[in-house]
Image (cartoon, rainbow, N blue to C red; front, side, top):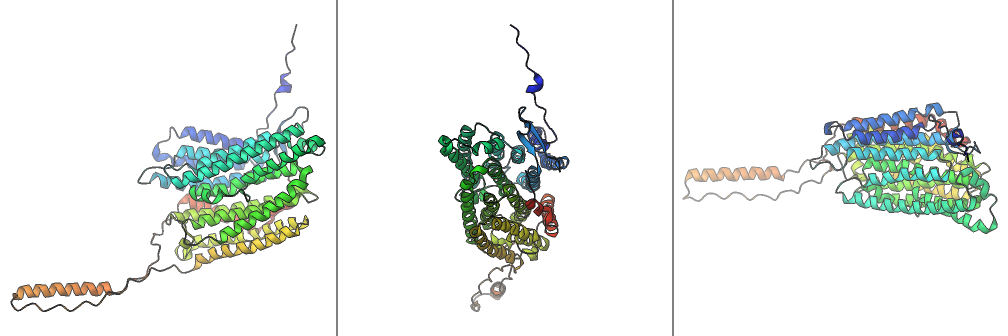
Length: 563
């Protein structure tokens, strides 16, 4: 009996290497940096950071050939339009956000690891592992927006998440870092378990893992499986809500941001959220449109709760508390997550759901640029004021005028006030999406929260330009009693010496009695700005200024069909 050989041409798929170049280059760079760490001498470890920055720059440049051309790969032979990887406008926008955010994080991390190398007690952060984990997480985050099946989506989600909580706990011997990593790990594992269960229920109902085929199957579900399908949809959404830090799944955020190295906190605040929102958009708008009546109201309530609790908690931060600046940015990021959820909820009620979620992409691009800039300034201030309190920023304009102006610009962008025009336009775009969807009550909740956020952003901005606090004056010395005359029997020489000593004591007392000159409470010297941090601040500031001058560069996503 002769068995025919299989047709290899039907079994082997051609791979579009140009389409998958951004995440592939980032992943390859992660492996190369880890291997190179074994051979690079200790004194040249900083080269690993600059190599990572170069690799991310190359990955960003690899996006250029993909602009304006929807490409796909890993497609089914029987259905060429059903693919696992698609490089469309949505994918490119999110990949630009992820790779750009990772590049800024690398610039901040170069200074962090350089300072760690000079630590008297020895290193607490290993170079090779740090760069490997950071680039691996960025590779997973860059893969996720291109995923068009649940398997690739969940794998990309975990590739982005697992290295991230390892980065949080990478500090050796740091209790806060360990606790933060544990909280982040538990929330991540819980989210993964819930997401996998939801995906399994969806697969059991539809018989497919491809998002477009899931949408077709859910539109005509057998009545016997309707409950199973609804449960799968809800569980999948809950899993992604954990990733976006939506209330009530936000408990890990403040402690994680405080315990993590500051560049890692910046990475989580932008790239971590981009991962969650990207996955949420893909499953709701592409896979679950038939169940819009289930996820639409749920996301609207989550958006209202998230922005309200996040802004209320940020408002309650005490200025003099340790790490209050980082905690305020953490709670602010929770509030901003609520704004990002609004257009996704509105997509359930819109005539064109894919166009509605463009507002989320536009807002995310604005938020990424200015929030990373705020963290870059916080990293600079933390070099001389490790507690990073809000009060440490009082009088920053007198100490570093340009840095204070840039931070003020970032905060005004987040608040949505001029000259941060991009922040104002992004918020108006989100308002427009929710009003067009007929969710008037959600628009009112958002308006109230914007006013609440104005207060704490402006309070921080005002601190930058206030006069530095002065140290309290020394208490006045008590009056020194007159020196007694030496007894008559004491020799004249001895009496003269005693008189001289008394006079010297009186002079010292007089000098001590003068009030001490006033001085700022923070006596840290004004150190030079490290080149990597200066580059990160300049890059984000330039981007914010350009976008404020030409907001249409970002806001065009709100009027474009991205998929």
